[in-house]
Image (tube, rainbow, N blue to C red; front, side, top):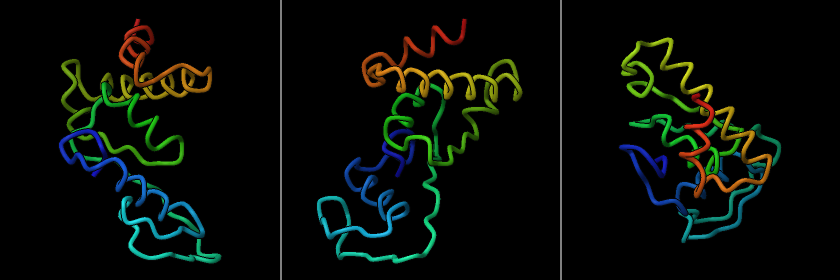
Length: 122
């Protein structure tokens, strides 16, 4: 799951899986879906992927959950833009950059996310 979108999953378990993908060593934590301690040693990490019904209004949550080190796959959320594919892709990029900048400035994405995107879209 991606926590948001049509493939929504439980946040704690999703974050446990993200840690398994990113970290070299992860302690057992059944509440986060990690049923045994995993030591990946020097194996390289992999990218977390969010996909399935996500669109620009999910961007604040996606940035908050996955940070900068992830792949965001916007299918219908891009291709279904009323002005076409290119404006849909532009909207995704503008929303992503605005959310990352706002996060880096210390703004609260959960509370201000929609306003951040509206302002960036002007």
